[in-house]
Amino acid sequence: MPAAQGDVTEPNIGEPLCWLDFEHAGRNALAGDAANLLWYLLSLGGWLVPAYHPATYAHTLRHPQPPLTGPTLDDLRIHPNRIELDWTWSTGPGRHAALSALHSRLRGDLGTAISPGGEVTAALRPFLAVRILGVIALGQMSGPHALLCLAKLAQTFTRLPRWPT
Image 1 (cartoon, rainbow, N blue to C red):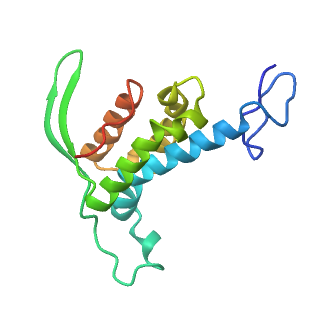
Image 2 (cartoon, rainbow, N blue to C red):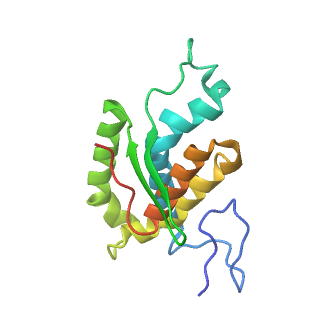
């Protein structure tokens, strides 16, 4: 039976109509939330939102500061058929600890709940892609920042993003 998207707030794309997807709705919501947390810890909270939407934290932080951590483009090589880049993705100790805990849970109980068949990465991919591309427009970013987000997107389609060290 074709399924709805899994989120009752999204348009129904099932054919025939299927307003509630009892088989996949919970797993979709869980995968979406895990991907959202992952991208928030990697980028949004510690780097992108403070850099591109600093007013977001103005009502919760008395003295908003520019981001202290984030990715750095170390080397960029452009070839006729490929682009090679090296980067450092720094998150700071607090976010690193949270990412490590999330990674451990994705390899354990949380991963099993998201994808009982063991394909956690495949389950997270579409949700990570939406977060990477859909929250802060690439056109708003500087060239290096946009390139780093696209590199993380490409990496997402080969495996889960590298965990910062």
